[in-house]
Length: 422
Image 1 (tube, rainbow, N blue to C red):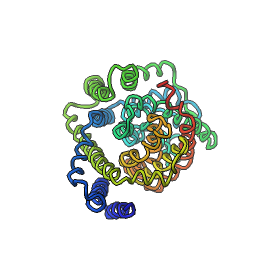
Image 2 (image 1 turned 135 degrees about the horizontal axis):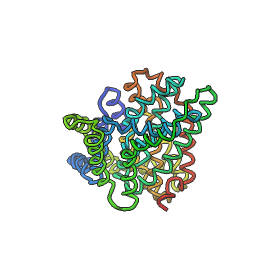
Image 3 (image 1 turned 120 degrees about the vertical axis):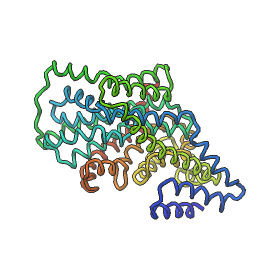
């Protein structure tokens, strides 16, 4: 049964069908040929129920807010602000890139939006400083991974949808791992700059720093509102998403005036297209998840891979491996939707905290997104920077090594994720 299911899905992917078709077709194959007692109408019913949860409303709202800010001046003001304080250090422009990705990630929740918004201005600055193009692009796509961990994270919203974890708790738990990645990248940026003799730039005066801080003050309000509001219990993640859209409109339309009112429908249309793709995948993933659970495939797979009584660490390392490999080939949202229902019950039974599990899974999704052969951020960077696939992946190995080290630390020391919650 499992081999027929896998063969059907792989065949459809090779034929060029979008991911939602193999998911739905896989569910239908199971229902018609292996679970004949199950009413096929359940597939349609589950697809509909998959996109009903209220928490999913946060996804289009965060996407819309990120699109407004990507069109406006928010990203450039954040880049200038960070560069004013660390740009003069050894490897300062690379540190600025990592920090700007972290800050923009706390606004957008999307790795691909961060690649576009931060990568476009920072790549040119890195090239002028003497960085190789492959090194600059590798830094951008891997630093953008932080956006999937720092709240608000679309990946965490999807994980919460198919697990028992709280979205608010997941958002808070992602802060520690996000900061850990930034620190690793900052240390590497310093070492890389010394090895390749990257020149220093002139230190910005305190007067200019204060001016750039003033300009960035309002954009810096985004993470304060989102994280602070959720952490203090003032509003839910979905309400935070609505507030972020309002805040983005006020900033870019009324205060900065970098986005015209006539541009809003076009931005909304772009956000709607991205949202529709996400929701179609969620719906198809829900149907597929229901079918494989009715066929008891998750139980068979976990028993075969993990054995009868696995330890918490064994479960986490196996989960990390499966999600890392899966996201190297398939969109992270699809992998989270398919694999979480398989491993979450086993992890919970082994004593793994659902929030810590969510951080591990989201981290692996971020890592796989920037890892060859088919990480989605690689193709985003290739399109945005008009570079070949090989040029984009050439500089990625050092960052993949650092991210793997970070993943091991997060698995071994759950307080990296949970210390703020505790």
